[in-house]
Image (tube, rainbow, N blue to C red):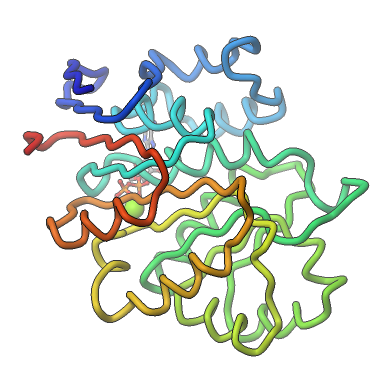
Length: 246
Ligand code: ADP
Ligand code: MG
């Protein structure tokens, strides 16, 4: 099923996959509890971020990710891909582990190719998490070491990391990803490159929960990478913004 629609900021939007939910018209539309069931605490932090309207990629991807569908999303640099995956994670993660009766360890992982990018995404997370007890860890040698005890790991909700850092901790036996429900590969074109491929396979393999949702975001996806992306996901929806769909 392929549809094309003119979107809020005038980008061409192409969606492929079964039962694609329609894009949201505004952030306000997400307050429809019956349709989206997003906890109310999300909205004040969204308003304080001063984003008036969703970008095309956000409008298209947020409803898809809220339905727990797998996703391959392609949209140019600067179109707001970060919020497109972070908002649904915060909406669907439930209570912070620190406040929950059954803390179960890391439930969302965002993997990016560089430390610098991980840092930026961590900052966006902190904005969305303001006033809440989410434990969001920018993974480094130091923060990974601080999680060598299971009790400490069980308090973590979200990890932002480069592939190598995650793999090192997995190999040291200092990290379990068995309860991860949301795995995002950002800048997926670089992550599916030869440099990272083995590490990505290991991370995906370690995320063994049967309810896992996988989402890949990128500005471009060459056909080789796209093939690997499609093999990694389950009954995915593919969204392309701004480029002519091929
Ligand atoms: P991408 O990952 O697609 O390159 P980013 O997520 O880094 O884009 O966002 C690019 C910029 O746009 C950031 O400064 C971000 O704060 C801003 N931004 C994101 N969503 C919106 C929105 N809905 N309205 C206005 N600005 C936004
Ligand atoms: Mg980005």
